[in-house]
Length: 301
Image (cartoon, rainbow, N blue to C red; front, top):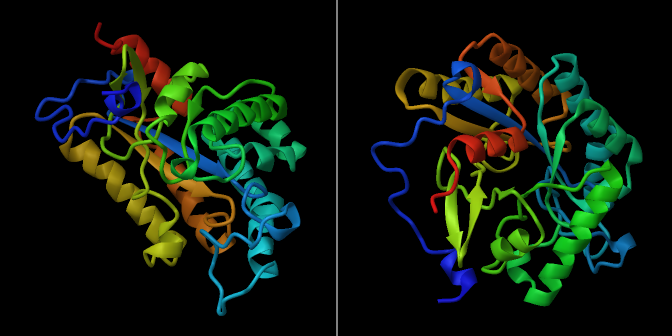
């Protein structure tokens, strides 16, 4: 078994009936992490030499467009020009931390947004050099893209990324390459509600699972239509853990071009206000969650 295969053995048991007590700070029962996916400017676009415009996770089109789709392009631009700043105001007004999953090329196109991330002390994790799918890359190309992403984010933000999340699907090689590149954790899994360690050959990698269920993509794909629905959805998730479960981690993914539109964003604002009134909820950056776990639950062996 190769190192790559060893890091991808399927585990259907996990922590089972008795998960570890994460001992979240302050006696919190739920750790909540909001992630802003900063992708706008990293997607495929004809002006950047691609054969067609990216349309993934946009509001959709009424017709198939060959080549350059100006409508889709402008939806991505909305996220960078307007949406990001609305989310930035919401989090900084409430002094709430969050994490950014960032595309290096997208950051390079908006230095003002990068400065705002630095000033807010948000942790910026790697999400690719471009908005590529790592499962489709050859190993040498993938390693190079991880290098370019790491260096590009470090140049834009002033500090290198310490966490990573691939677009949709990593390859069998990704986790080992991230360890080689010095990443402290990755979020390339959706299989748990607590961090855990995996063996990658003779090494260990910390996985901080992500979620596409508690994610604003539901506005695009699963029929959520209003901010009020988003508020109820997040409250139900947190309340479920508070009332019934062992302590957990809940990840809530956001996109500048999706939830930041006013009719949706008001629901996010009310969600943040509700969370600040919950004494048993710890709203934290992803790097802080990873380092807390590493300190209290180090890798065996």
